[in-house]
Length: 104
Image 1 (cartoon, rainbow, N blue to C red):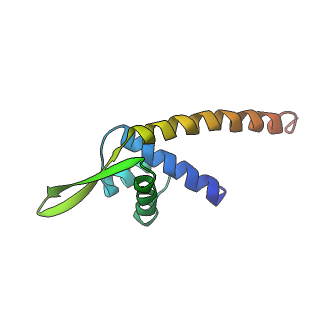
Image 2 (cartoon, rainbow, N blue to C red):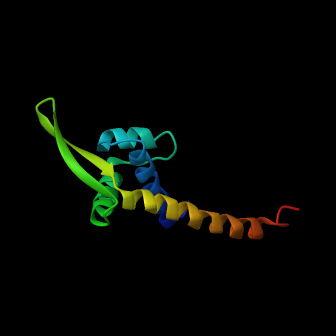
Image 3 (tube, rainbow, N blue to C red):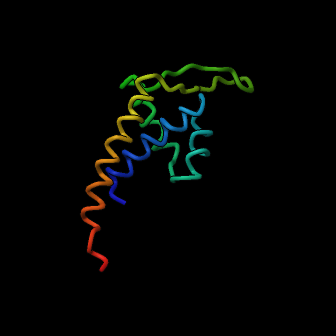
């Protein structure tokens, strides 16, 4: 898969996971692994970009004597998912055009 396409999909997958509820790094990786491979070393830069873009907020909770960072999707993050879905519909139209008649 094209690296830029995969990166874009990973970014939306992370937002979708957070749309299901606040979460932390390891759990996000675990939840995403059902659909796509993502490493923590890939996840944290995505989360930083999401925070910078206003798609997520961050808060800390003490867990076993340590602070654990939780990520929470914002309204803007949810709008980004909706925008992605609209864009993907356009991509699928082009895909259908390209695919048409090729496998005959």
